[in-house]
Length: 131
Image 1 (cartoon, rainbow, N blue to C red):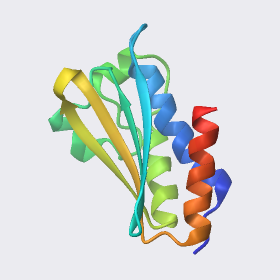
Image 2: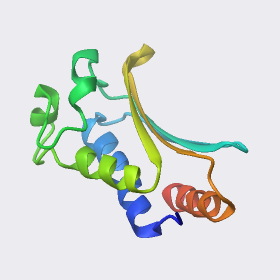
Image 3: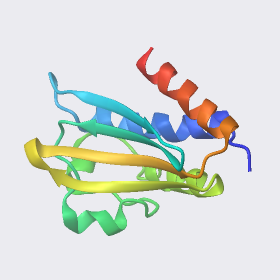
């Protein structure tokens, strides 16, 4: 199935919006891409509080917000649920990661066996994110 640029862009926008919302002033958000013959992986890492392990099974549930999510500002708890649905429609997997060293959180957008057109779209998305 060909990827819809707008929808994959929406997924990336949601991941970056979450990172911005949960990264303190002076913090860092990093977008890393890795292209292999089998997959394209985009990792969004931030220096925010991260996702506590007990919340990982629920982060893609509609309307789910952690305590820190509610403190971070307005939101409905739909962003990651919508992102997950859009990702699944494109055979893309969103993988939340628990708190890492230095209180970093990570979310990956992974497309298994991307075709040439899919790889190109994700590469262009990468450039628009960095640009």
